Length: 127
Ligand SMILES: [Cu+2]
Image (cartoon, rainbow, N blue to C red; front, side, top):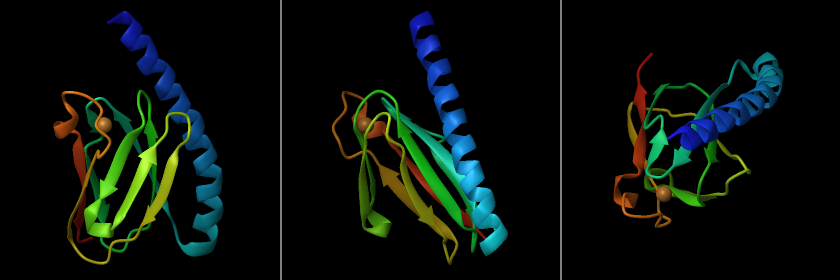
């Protein structure tokens, strides 16, 4: 339990550093293109955290996904995209949804007994 807590703390620090990097890039883009928000998702056995990511219609979002314990997969069937999430290498992609609804994603690299529960969704709502 304490070892797990320690690992979690380390990974949160890692994400913080990553966010600082994304922030400087984000502020440049913001100045030029009217704003982009960075959303960080952590992938670990057997969940994406957060599992629900709210986004407004028309909002530009840079998604940064960081796996911490395994090469999880992130499959987004609605978008026809998938990624291997390699620990230590953040996966980045941009979303700019044009209509309300949900965009589901799931882990498609078998990662253990809870694998089937490892999924989440982007929830797109009107402003
Ligand atoms: Cu997984």
